[in-house]
Length: 280
Ligand SMILES: [Zn+2]
Image 1 (tube, rainbow, N blue to C red):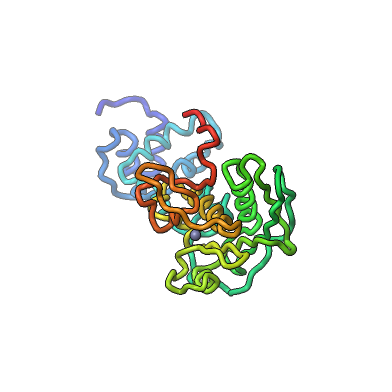
Image 2 (tube, helix red, strand yellow; image 1 turned 90 degrees about the horizontal axis):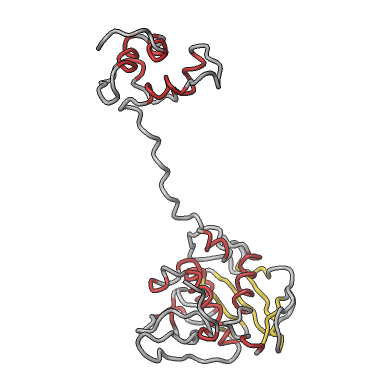
């Protein structure tokens, strides 16, 4: 290498001894490290202080760039994604953690507060309960349920009815329960808590499906959650099951879509076609 006047890089390097000089004067990638710089210490922060250069002084990044360009400066590995962490869609549905324990405490808390019915038609009043101890934000869950029921694609389409929420007595209760408790409330242990159901005035949603949806709704978990609310409350309103009317047709909301779309397409709504699709 040709001699040249001492640069700041060289001065910087000399402060760290011979090994550092090699780093400062040779192109990145040519260095086999020995000595004190074979380290992943945050040199960019250490150097200015070591040299008496005040932080924010004239271009302290020069020296740091050279020194940090060494091949041994390994980047900090990104933390592995946390499978328990809720997505934005999960949070909007009240899910605080994605891990579903099989059993809950078996007791229920009514979500406190009330909300007036926003629409026209007969008012249907709903109470919302969440099994105690589930990692669920009851207020957000209740908000999701009521927003679904009061969507214009829902049972209240065109003023047919409108839904209010109360924490008192109500003719329909929407319940979110652990798999074991939902199996007990659904009176059918064969479901192993994987299916939601309606039991009298209670629409029982299993946390297992609330969190995981189904494979066919894996790209649209919010749509699945809207489906299961509309389907189970649909039973409470007196609707029975329907079958897929044909391949490629939207699945009726009263089809048991959790058991498979059977050639139909996803559809969470009682009145899906009456609302124009948003522009692409
Ligand atoms: Zn059903």
